[in-house]
Amino acid sequence: MSWDLFTAAARESLESESRNAELARQVAAKQADAGFPTPAIPRRASMTVSEVNAAARELVEGHFPALWVAGEVSNFTRARSRHCYFTLRDRDAQIRCVMWRDEARRLPTQPAEGMEVKALGRLTLYEQRGEFQLSVAELEAKGEGLWKLAFDRLHTTLTAEGLTSPLRKRPLPAHPACVGIVTSSAGAALHDVVTVIRRRAPWTRIVLSAARVQGEGAAAEVAEAIRRIGRANCVDVLIVGRGGGSVEDLWAFNEEAVARAIAECPVPVISAVGHETDVTIADLVADFRAPTPSAAAEAAVPDGSRVHADLAALSARLSAAVQARVAGERRRVERAGDALAFAGTEALRRRRDALAGAAGRLNALSPLAALARGFAVPLADDGRVLRRAGDFTPGAAFRLRVADGTISAIAGPLPAATEESRGVE
Image 1: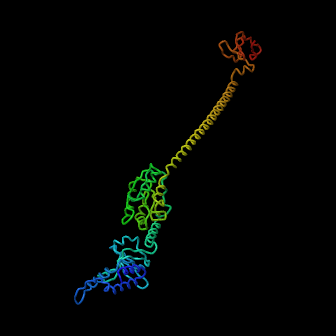
Image 2: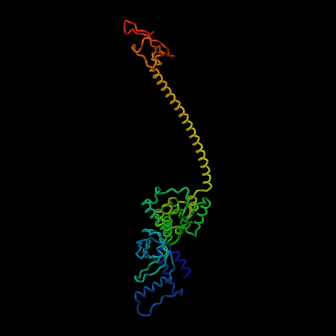
Image 3: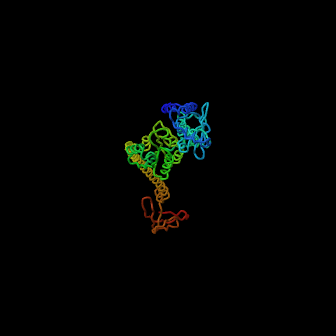
């Protein structure tokens, strides 16, 4: 069996560990004829356990290529060292697996018990225990697998805390003076966002808080970039995102650190990750989800031409409103003037009527009124009113005041009969 045929056969061993074991037996049977080197064995009567295990490890690792192994996950454990240990099994057999810390960091989450997966790794032997095992470099689940499982787990946690509730979504400002952006300084997303903002609202300031958006540590950088913008207190709205990519490329925006940084941001956040079909945890927690970075920019700022048209219409409405208000106030002042003039006329008439009534009453009490009715008032030369008969001296002159003047008169002698009969000639 040639080496090329062996490699092809190894790649076909995805479905069954038993087929891999059979392949190993075939290789062992053929390697003497094929001229493969054999591990060096000391020339003595016996070998130590360590020497046997070391030779077995050299044989296994030297003659088996990296291969995919399919099976169900069992007893998955992440040690304090961050190494992961688990078992892959099928209906007939099982194999122990180890995933070292550096490779395990790429796992989006821990696989569930019984999950069907494919593991890419190399066969080896753990010398200290003499255990045959698979050193795993990559672990994939069926379909969306581990990525979907990690997404659902975090989504459930954040939903229970209310971070994805529509009730906590904040409205976007209509006319932001400054827009913040969290993305890669070298990515196409930044160019798209800046281009749209400059076209629609060139008066808007733009502040970039740069971060890596892909790879190990990207989630921590994005979260810190969001908090940095929040501490600066210099923007009215924040766009967080990147261009399209695979699920793994976009995974930083499915990390809990980014989700919590978005939820804590003091200004509304627009999430724009990938393309329209890509939905991330950041999209669910953000105040507004845009399908692309360009769409995020359009949502963040108004269209300048529309703003100018709205301002012109507002100016016309304001002018019409002012004119209407002035006309209304003029009519109100005119009505108030008419009412004031009428009130003045009425007040003057009432005062005139009151004065006329008082004059009438005063005239009724005037002596002139009595004279007009035919009475006369005798007056002495010194102007005294002669009221009694004894005030007259016979033969003395006096004046009689009548309605239209004064008449001279002389007092005659009094009749002799009685004092009461004294009169005037």
